[in-house]
Image (cartoon, rainbow, N blue to C red; front, side, top):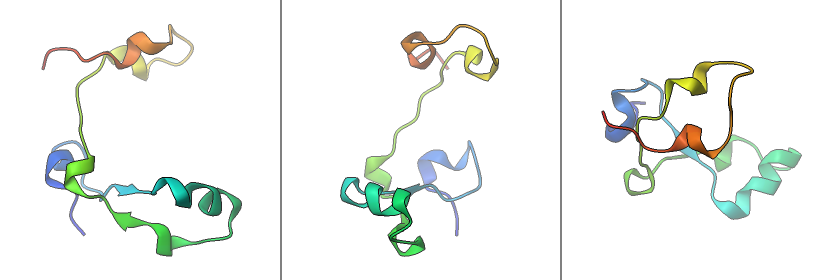
Length: 70
């Protein structure tokens, strides 16, 4: 399976999305891979963030996910 177009330039694996009502059954083990549906392109978005997200033990917090210029 190919990755969704929006994310293909970042990674070659297909992202999946668990619908909200399926999170608990997935985490508890009550349900399996049947819950893993191909991500719907309209539900996906991406933006570049600070390279600080790659540093273990460094600064953390909401500032790490603020959009930065490409």
